[in-house]
Image (cartoon, rainbow, N blue to C red; front, side, top):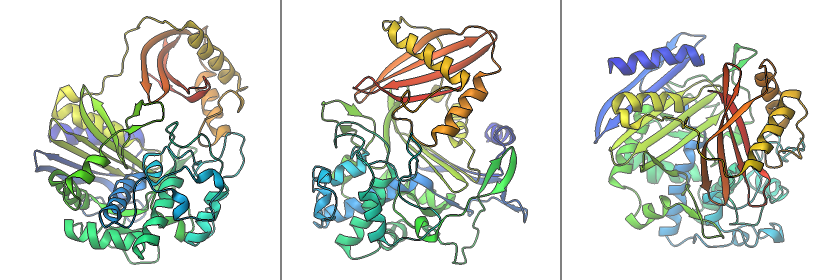
Length: 446
């Protein structure tokens, strides 16, 4: 723990994080549940194991459990068309199932992100909506692909799952979680977000604006109650949640098996995502994980099954990277868990792809990337392109590209390159969809 403490305290100023909570459970034993830094910078309140953080998308795993409870109750089926619960939905939604919503394979665009052409996703974060109004707003979003044909993260799907839970159970999904998940597992402070309620030990969320710490951005209260990740959770709640996961509590064993099954696409290939969990491998061993990001908070839960180890990191800065904390702690506990990025060049069998990356880098450096270059880019296109330009512009000389990894994820091909500009090296990742268009493009200093 001395090494873990030193690592966390060293990483916090590097990421400029105000407060962090760390949870480590090994073979059922709680090794650590503690806090570092400030839960509230203005008041100088320290983070403890009781400090309440926002869940972000880590909350999706709880929504998935609430859905499976309805399945076990016989109130819905995973292969039901969503139009059974939303009869006014577009005709194009008839082939979308509850399972598609759970696995991010519905094709429905993500309401939290603007489109590459800067058009609106139809939901104003500054106004309140009823569930019916949110559903109608979702109906206006475009279908990005045929349901089941691809994987693409969509908060909209989980928002709709919360509405479905309400429709079939007759109760708000948060009340279902409180009665049937939080209370039975002893998650004493877990609850839906509320700015109006008095919530003991609540942390403040922060963001960086031009390098200066600012309070979290405000969103309308009802948009902090949706099922895509609007929970308050402390580290003690996560410790209780981990205990329930280890014993496969709440649900039947068959339901947990479905939650942890990677989704199969129409092509027959699988993508490493189940219901609210990335179902992946680390060093060839089963690894279940998920991150969350919302309103000044970043969270991560990482479970290494063979090692029987769970690490949870909660932070109150929108710009933080909790996965770096998780990876560093895991490597201290067991060096075999160190996330070593590939760095040895492999044979490049697709030189046309490499040349395409070279062209993209040239355009990014010149600030001339267009939405047509990156048709599937998620989030703010303008802000992303500006980040690329700022990263690349100071670098000198022609780039030297070395392919270091190629992986298939579902039907997408993912390539990782080390790109050297003189003495500086970038790690660049692209993904190509089945139609050969870019589905991902990102870069960072190596």
